[in-house]
Amino acid sequence: MMDFDRRPVTWTASRDLVDYPAAVTAMERRAAAIHAREASELVWLLEHPPLYTAGTSARDADLKHPDRFPVFASGRGGQLTYHGPGQRIAYVMLDVQRRFGTDVRAFVGALERWVIAGLAQLGIRGEVRPGRVGVWVSHRDRADAERKIAAIGIRIRHGVSYHGISLNVDPDLAHYDGIVPCGIADRGVTSLADLGCPTSIKDVDMCLRTSFEATFGAETEFADPAGAGIEPVVVSK
Image 1: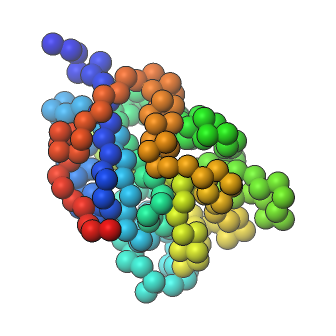
Image 2: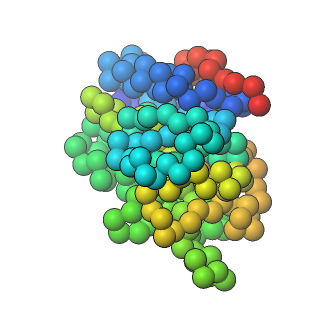
Image 3: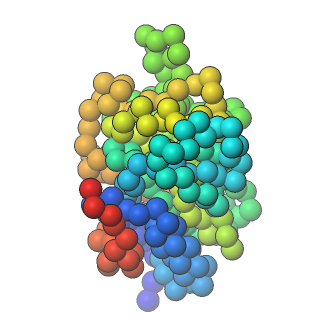
């Protein structure tokens, strides 16, 4: 029998839009099972219907239009962010204690490098900025050149992570107008489509999986959501 610590990371993707509260419940259950060594680590790829989430550092003043979309308090780190169709979310349930000890910054840095490596496969140069979590790109032909393309917000319980990253593939960027994204008022957001890099969610998934394996030195194995133990928590498109 394979040693638990050497089991591949399960990789799964939901085809339909996923209800946010139900997704959080599913993540919490999986994180608890990983901690109890009853389930493998998991990366869950999905999209949500349009909504805003407020992390533990969110400020009320940054929610400019509270009636525009549903707003959910989230236990993850960070401030306000938007989720919606056209944005690839990767919820990452990993044994951070085993992989990084107590160095949460090292884990967040690995998440950033993972996204940057995935973007590089698509010909996009992602960058990090001191003091600002997430991945940024430069629009060299615009006055507001620096824009965020991927947000990161995690929570760690009993040494296991959940929540994760959101990468803008082709969402409606106007939906960000209802908030101050991540509490940063002087920087905008962008997407792969906005950068002139039209690509499919499927292609993004392939790049993310390849770069995840390289960044974390982890083997992955694909399973459909039911096979991965994820309950059907979808909403209609």
